[in-house]
Image 1 (cartoon, one colour):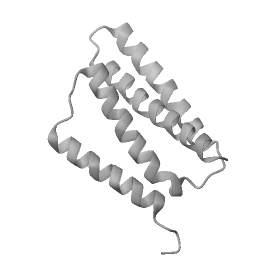
Image 2 (image 1 turned 90 degrees about the vertical axis):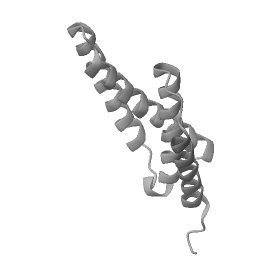
Image 3 (image 1 turned 180 degrees about the vertical axis):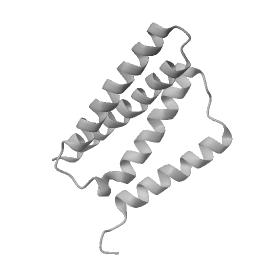
Image 4 (image 1 turned 120 degrees about the vertical axis):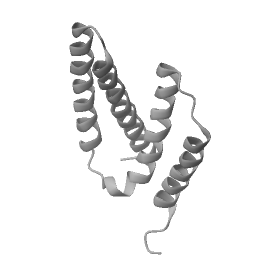
Length: 113
């Protein structure tokens, strides 16, 4: 599998995981029972799709974990800002820089080092 295809699948996985989590969060906090059930059910379907997408490719997920964690952080913060209006605080940005740095180390540190 090529680098671009792997990146695209990991990005889609991060979108599905963070999006499914947001749907479940909406369901848990909805006042109307129909909205609650609908969001929870849709969140479950999206999280199930995440599990399929991230586990179907024949890759060593441990080697791609750095990229995935970084993508998940960025996507989750983007969803949190766009859909919930939550601006990242300085501690979140500082921690996010550490997450991105860790992802780069995991991804690009030579395996034989």
